[in-house]
Image 1 (cartoon, rainbow, N blue to C red):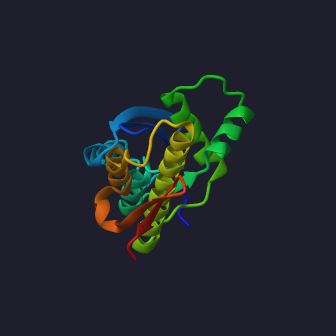
Image 2: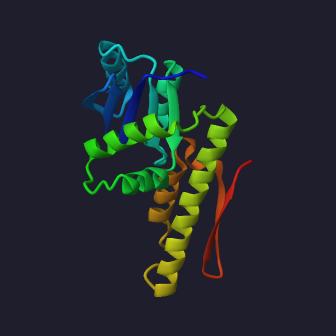
Length: 196
C-alpha cells in the first residue's frame, strides 16, 4: 500500500469540479472543467506542484465523477469514492457550517488525509454495462410510473404515446430503441419488453 503525502479533495458537479490539494502543510485550490481537457489540466496542475501520486477522494454522486475517477486511477493516483453521508458526518464532527464547492473540496481533502478511506478500483466492463442497464431500467420504471399517474389523473390516454416513445428513446441512450422489443398498453398500464 502506498503511503501518500499529497491529498486531493474533489467536489464534483456536472460541468466542473473544484479541487483542494493538501501538500506539505499547504493548500492549493482550483476549478476545472468536468471533461477530458479538464482532467489533463488537472494532471498538469498536480505535476506543477510536484504532487504525484496523490490520494484523491470524491463523493459517490452518480455518473458525474465516474470518468474523473477512472482517469486518475489510470494516471497512477490512488482514488477513493466515498459515501456522501460519510463526508457530511465528518463535516458535522468538525463543526463546519459553511457550504460551498471550495469548502466541500477542502473538507473532502481533509477527510482523505485523516481517515485514509479504502481505494477504489474501476469496475470491469461487464460491471459497468450492468450498472448502466440498471440505471436505464430505473429511469424507464420512473417514466412508467409517471405515465401511470397521468393516466389515473385523466391527463393522457393510450393515443398519447409519441411523446412517450421519445422519452423512452432518450432514457435508453446510445442503445436507442433497438433495445426495445415492444411496448404494450393494457388495463391502464404501460409495459416495455427488451431484447436480450
